Image (cartoon, rainbow, N blue to C red):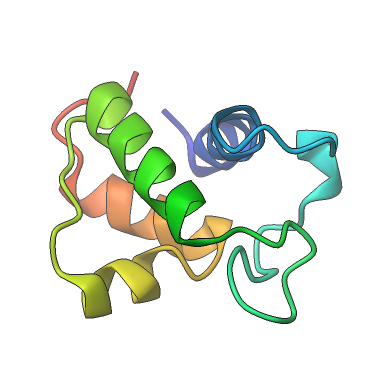
Length: 90
């Protein structure tokens, strides 16, 4: 799976999992997903749901909270992590 295909799939996964009313293509790869500057306004429940969706879809577990914050900083950082660690990119 190419980086572009992965980022498109991740944007769709984030928007669908967190039930946000925003077209996935409206998200840029580098914009924050969480935090005060994030348009999505995701919270800790969204992070948990997203973490479970990533485990189900890509077979990765995000267990360390400090590392999880770094990984989920943006779509680009999440894609980088998955390309490096995901056992299955489908």
